[in-house]
View (cartoon, rainbow over the protein chains, first blue to last red):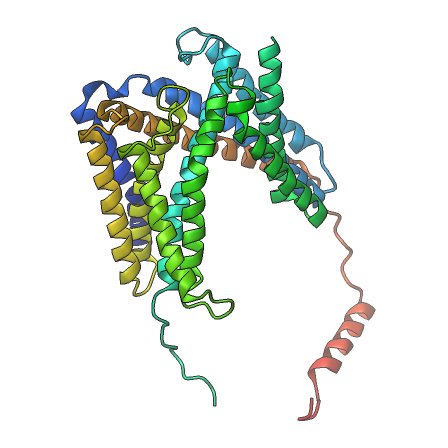
Length: 154
Length: 265
């Protein structure tokens, strides 16, 4: 029973992060019906770009892992392969005409545009974390000092 | 062709330098490499900030313009939050009351600056229309902040003990953010159309969701690669069992360290 409760509380906690963004997106949809235009293309581009960039960052982190493991080659090759798969799939989908292409003249321009947009979204998420995390931390640091549970030893 | 080379030289190469510097700073162990990483980050970001002047013909330069537009309010928010946090109940290195007041003023100015970009004439405009990257940034910031604020309220309810003050403050922040989004949907700003904002908000949702899925996939693949490699490693060679002599010697050493002793020890 307690395990079920803790699982339910984790689900509620996860849902609380998604509730307001979903409600606000729903409101935008109700107010202006056609706001979803281009959303699938943006989702696809964002997914492929973030997968590829994250794979390269994780590949770089394998050098740190390698220091503790006598520098093995096979995980590096495996992760490089995974990152290159991301690059290849991105270019394959971008070359399929309108599937993932936006108002950019060439595949290269679209790929570069995706990278800049990824950076913009990443900056926005970082600043959101700064605002919410910073305000929570500032409030925490400015709350009254709590009483100790046990008396200090004389 | 020449324009492409200039764009590579003044935008993409500094971008790569920035990323390389950040990775060096994050992952390197030696302080000299970390310092070199910091320098590379500084050089990269400065060159990107100069893009509207160095490569005004390139579409990439609008990203440099966008970064330049948000540096001011972001720095005000960051320094303000730092001052406010470390002027509270900090046992060591507590900041003064004047720094606390300046922190509050900085946070208010930072928020007003960001709001002025939506509701006043401060909207980043480059070269003649609203910078598209600012639209992406602003809608994503509002979208993610509402999610984080609601999640943080729930987190303090579940995990924290007697965190009423934090919950109240986060609820005020959440209500402010939701109000701003609804106002953005309902009313046009001087340069920001309500319908365009609603559209960008949806696209921001698609971007963030795509990013979450992409990151999750990459982490899953990474874990799979490591687990696969570890499963292929040969078993470590086993040592032979200890002999009678070794066991007797070990028992003697243990006994010497566990028996006897005086009250002085």
